[in-house]
Structure formats: structure tokens, C-alpha cells
Image: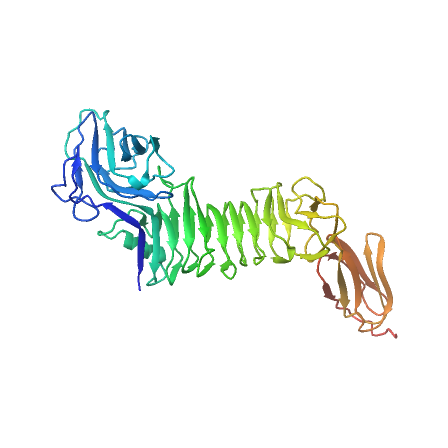
Amino acid sequence: MAVSLSGMTLHTDNDNETWSGTDDPDDYNNAIQGSNSESWQVSKNATETGTLTKSSALPTTRGLFMFWMSSNLAPYYTDIELVLESSSGNDKTFTVATAANKAIGGNFVASVVDFINKGVESGTFAPASFSELAIILDNSASGNIRSVINNWIDAMYFGVGHTISGTTAGDLLFKEAAAVDQLTANQYGILQNYNDIIYSQGDIDCAGTNLVSDSETLVFVDTINGYDTYNFDITGTVSFKNTTIIAAGAIDFILDAESATSFSMVGGALTGAEDVRLKDGQTFSGVVLNTAQAGTIANDPSGCTWNAPGLITVSATGSLNGCTLNDPSGAVAVDISSLNRLDGCTFNSDGTGHAIDLGTVDADTSMSWNCPTSGYASSDGSTGNEVILVNVTAGNTLTVNVSGVAYPTVYNTGSGTVYMPLATYSLSFSGIPSGVEYRLRQGSYNLQHQQDVTTGITAVFQYEYTEDYPVTVSFTGAGIIDSKTFSVMLSNSDQIIPVIFDPDPSYIA
């Protein structure tokens, strides 16, 4: 069992290429990939160009060009540029290192450029006709330094990133994939394992037949010329447990599992996802999503937490169960057609936006609601931060049966009706002997009164819940030695309170 990688194509290994402006293969076989690299002595106080004429058909819609380079001139250079040319006058130039950002130093570094979306274009660069590249190193302000072989250029690849196939040997999917990437014969320059945190500067498609990741961390990297949005696709049979996926810096990623054979994610976190796309039947439980800009949910996430999310669209096959949404960032947190597919979720607002957009209700409809909320408008209206946004059309009624939580506020943009019947609960007292007078008050108002309660009867008070409020209960009478008075909070749940008395043995019923 092992994973394999595809998706990056070798342009050249630079073991023995014919460059102009450089100094031929290294005499000491200094290399990170293969057996050698191209050596290059750039003079002091000079700007020099190394050119390689070699053709490859680069992808035309999405792709990276990766090259390995080492430079001992990092303390001195002004910048390093990569130029990709398809024909004379038609090229793209990328600044891959500067004096302020010494991205290429003494150790070999894998630099990537997004040749579709980044770079400064001269004429019209045609990726499919790529024929020549140049590396320009500006060392013009170096001062009086010693001039020796001071740069090495090694393997170059192109492609979108990695497709991971096969089967993991254990439960460390990304660590196993990085090990394949970093084999001396490969050195694709996409994945790097640093202290067991895996860094990626390319797309990833998990396409294997049994890929398992347990308690790993995968970080998509913010590079100078790389992707702004990474594709993180799940197309095979994949299982994540307590694994964290992070977009570092100003970039983001799209987790797309809509084409997966099978996908489950239990625990762990997604940070910086632009979009999360799930399909019916997938397990997505206990995941923390930080600053996820959007989501398309066709399955049934449970116990997940979204922090500062964008719009989450729940399709007809999807639901949210016991999930928490903190400070949604948009005008609406969840787009869903039925409240019945939200069970015990919690919505915490920063005071802007609706929790739910139900869309249009054009028939008499009944739904249930048991989701606590905070930070939303306290009354119905049109301020834009009511809990529920809905358009109930003329002549129709949306009935919302509320259970166990406060009544949600509503912004109804239609001329129909939103009706929320009050829920009924009961307050019961058991263990009352005969000869007892029972009284239930709210302030000075009598809610319920019974006198000479017969032994074994339970006093029951039923009420319609609007909000929590305190009541006072008292038990007096000849049937007990000491009277009792205490307070009870009427809440949105049934209560049965046993009361222990000292019966008066002299009392005769």
C-alpha cells in the first residue's frame, strides 16, 4: 500500500542542459533533484541573465511553473526575475525575490509562479507554445564582494499541483504524499514536510481508493507569485479525523467533495476556505470552520462550528444538526427552504444580517424551530438583522412551532402571515398530603389556588411560554406542621417538583 503523485510534468532536470549566460553543470554536482544542477557565477555590481531555450506545452487555463534555485547572493541582490516566453516579444515576467523578501537564499528553494493569472505580460504570452525562459539576477548594488560560483538552478516542473492516488499505508495521508514529492528522483517542489506540518504551494486532488488522514495539519502557502485560491478536491475515498486544513496569509482554498466516491471528516478544522462543497451521504461532524466564505451543504453536518462564515447554502438533501454559527459576515448566514432541517443549532450575531433566509413560501406551511439565537433584532421588523427573512405570499400562512427556545424575530417581505403559536408547558408539584392549601402567584396575582388538596394529587399549572419569569408557590394548612414558600422560574420546559412535608399527625381529614 502506498500513495502516488501525478499532475506535475518535468520541464528539465538541469542535470546537463545547454544554457547561455551561465556556467554549465556544477563541477561538484551540487543539486537537490537528480544528479546535478546548472551553476552560475553572477559578478559583483552587475545584472546578469541566464537563458534556457527549451519548449513545453504548458496548461492554458490553470497552472504553475516551479523551479529550484539556490543563491549565495541573497545578502546583496536587488531582485531576481523569471521570464517565460512563447515567442519573441510575447512573454511574462515574475519577480520571484527582492531585497525586502529574500525568497531565494543559500539553500535550494522551490519557487512557483501562476503563469495564467500572475506576472507582467509583454505582448501575448501563449502557455501552450512556451519555448524559452530567462532568469535575471540584479546584483548591481552588491558592493565589492568576491565573485565565485554563487547560484545554482535545478529541476523545473509545470502543472496544477498533485493528484494523490493509491492507498495510504497508515493514517498520515499528507505526510506520505510529501515523502513522495521530496524523493531525490522527484523533488516536485509542491509539498514540504516541516516538523510534521505539511505545506503545499499547489492544488491537491485526493483521488485514491483509501486515503486516511488522522491529526495532520496541511497548510496552503501564500507565495509571491502563486495561487490566490487553491483547489482542494476530494474525488476518491477519503477519511479525515482531527485533521486541520489552513490557508495561510491572504490566500484561500475551495474544498470540493461533490465528486467524491466517499468522504468523511470528523473533528479538525478548516481555516480560510472560500467555499466548502459537500454532497448527500457524507459525514461532516465536529468540524470547526474559521472564516469560511461560503458553503454548499447537501449532507447533514452535526456538531460543527462556523466562525465568521459567509453564506451557507443548504440544499434540499442537507441539514444542520447541533451546529453553531458565530458572527456570520454576510447579509444572511444560512439559505435553506425549511426550518425543519435545522435541529438545535445556535446562531450568534454581531448585530448585522439575518440568521436564516427561507426564500418564498407560497402555500400554507408548518415548520419547527428549536434554535437559540443571540445578537439579533428583538422584535419583528425590517432592520435587516431579524432572525428569519422570508417572503410569505398573499393569502398564505407560515406557522412556526417554537420549542425550547425564545421566539425568533421575523422580517416578512410578503403580504402573507407568519404565525407562531405559543408553546404550552406545565409546572407540577407532587407529594402533597391532605389538609394543605396550595397557592401559585406571580407578584400579587393568583395564578392557581387549591384548598384541602387530597393526598396523592399532583398540583399542575399549565402556561403558555413567552419568556422566563419567576413565580412564588406556598403550601399552608392544618395538614402539615410547617408551611413552605419558595420561588420557581417558569421556563420553556416541563417541570415536576417533588415537595417533602412533615404531616401533622393530629390532623383528621
